[in-house]
Figure 1 (cartoon, protein in one colour):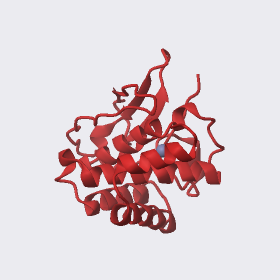
Figure 2 (figure 1 turned 90 degrees about the vertical axis):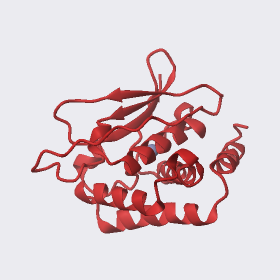
Figure 3 (figure 1 turned 45 degrees about the horizontal axis):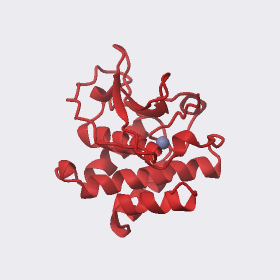
Length: 200
Ligand SMILES: [Zn+2]
């Protein structure tokens, strides 16, 4: 079974701790104070490129101060997204993580060879997943109360708290802003990716 450990932060030039850990989103205030818990939003609908439904599963630990997501196939081969400690992230960031992880299923990343961490191919996969996520937030009525700025702010704050340099944050926000401003629907974007990969 292959496992793709995907993270919300795709530019992994920050620190060895962050590179080594799947947990890349820090909740503001995690280091010193007890973070207020956030209500956990309902997961999105999600199917992979083979038409299989993706299940979202809560994975919480009592002392964790990070929210993160992981897309994979479980031990039975079913496509899943594990949601780690989502109560540590505000709703816009929860939505973005959910849709980013879903995108790894939509684009077939989960069933493809996993490129080396931080390779151009890996960063491209992460950039694509971010793009699909922000397009779904832009277009899906269920996220109509989430603005681009909500996502950019919560993502930037979380990455900043986690120790990512400003250049990593700004380049990531710049990518999703570009997608949000210029691209058509997420479905069209996914179709293009699958076609290019010979998966459609
Ligand atoms: Zn990812």
